Length: 341
Image (cartoon, rainbow, N blue to C red; front, side):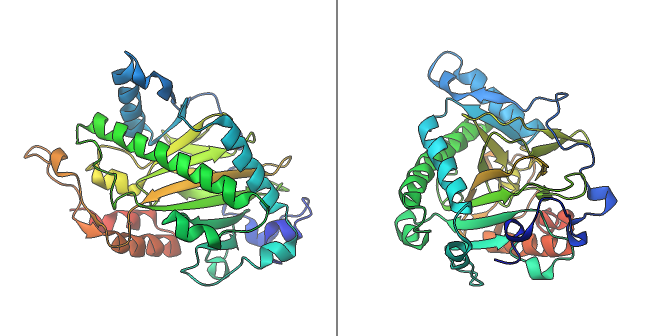
């Protein structure tokens, strides 16, 4: 645990190996801005006369920004608050309890890390501690999750089930907006689910470092729960804009796999996480991803003579290899370039 930021930081000193190059630093853009509002969509209107309007709002957000927020989504506020409390309590556990969960086993269903899983290979570290938890098959994974706090497994299991239902619903709404058959993504393309929880301790100088750098997700879609502390930013029109946290809302990100499956009709929005000097922040991110051997290609219903495929077909494990290479070389162009026609 000695490498974990929360174990050694005094909130006053920022080590040199956490200071990003000038062109990557957040600078003064460390708080939510008001010059662009991330679409906030009311899913409660889906059962009424505004159904088609809601579907259009989702599709438009996916095309223009690659992200949106949803409320009235069917996940109880009580459950969201309980999950936030469990995650907060987890990071406040004694170091000896958390140390037992640190592993180098790549196949582990639960692992803690600081910065990234490639910490020892990094020159510059991220200002975060985190854990990654596999959630499928759920019944097989739960015994590998932390036994502390006492209700962790019970609450996070319920939370995962409900957000999974929401994710499948959103995927069907995307299908409707694209004009492809309902349930198109409710198969191997979305059956591997992982939860990543980020803890960003109070930072001595948020203008010089990042919690998570600029990136797009390796998922079909990603559903993120923020707390009350701002920190998520989305790249829009060559500038970073903040996503104001709404306690009862989820942020939905379009991932790289959805951009490919939609034949480029939907955008894999770039985003990052900044830190702050006053309060620690946490976020819980559920990734809806294909299984490793799942075959990925643009949906045939979207391919015509006028709209030929932009990407070749491939197995998801090929994409994961490209993703790891792009991350190691810090070259985001390598995420999709190997699959473009």
